[in-house]
Image (cartoon, rainbow, N blue to C red; front, side):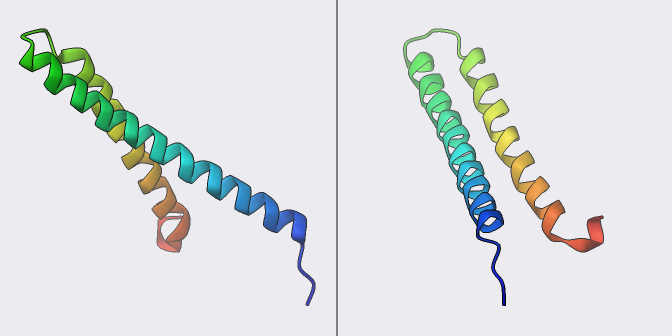
Length: 76
């Protein structure tokens, strides 16, 4: 059995990078929701943080759906 260590390292680094990216985007969405609540308590407009949070969560959902597309062979 011959293991291609370079390919394994490439897959591992891309997987870790994608995971960290999705987690960071999700955290930004949660932060934007917290900013929205803070803005609402102060009586300010809360539309921009809500749109930002929705965009972050939509990006996370897109990443999850793309991963499922790659994993499930019936979708190809």
